[in-house]
Length: 341
Image (cartoon, rainbow, N blue to C red; front, side):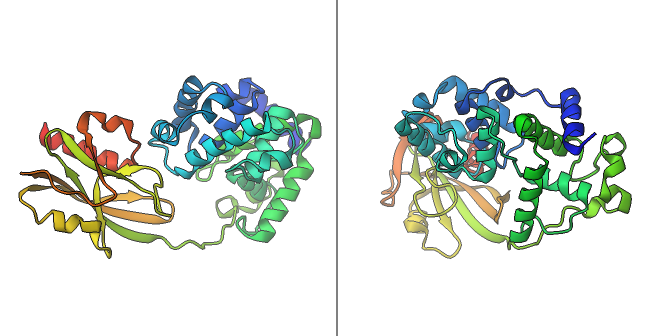
């Protein structure tokens, strides 16, 4: 039995039952693929269900505001995905419907080769192989490939091999089988080699190199940042501003903030005013892909309404749920809740 046939047979018995696999609706499939970028299925599935309930069609999503989309996305991280999602929904509506070619699908904001192949094969049966982390791992181990997966040569080599292995008339099944096989059996750590239907032909298993493959070049240097958040309480209101710079969390809201190395946008001057300043928590660590953030949380209750920096505004505390915030600010809100009872 061939590599592809073995995988598809395995998938028929052990593949995951996911709601977006029960439809050929390009919108539902596209939405699942965008949500599952950088997100585990267990975490992403409830978001997909909420989005489908709130905006059941691409036309409905296209009519939403950015604030509405970011608010429903809150907690998933990588917020550029949410902004791209809305932009692409409006592209699709302007096109008169989802494009049905790989080239057309790639034109959508936030859609790369992998996502285009997934949408194309699952929704339209296009014979395009998906290549993600799971696919890299399965192919590297089975064929004993040491080419780094994040090198130009590696990307070309694995993409070519995946396309060669793909049975054109069973593209969707093969792609789903590859992803599930890598996610549940040929896992990054402690793979289930004893249960693998491909163990006899697996080069990595034969050579004792399972833990070594796939190979990945180390490139990224993680930066550390130090942020101070001050939650202001004055007569049932608090201060927020929307992040608009070319930086993390674009479009989300946060309270008074200053960062090590900047002038604090007048925040430090504000704190010289009268009132009670309480340290809620110090050194809260928040890890992003390329950054580690260390944050200090404060609660400030001034005796009179302070004049805010230009880009901040007052809002009622009971309206905070209307503003999408990063996870770090959610943690601040939890500490504030503990402090004020």
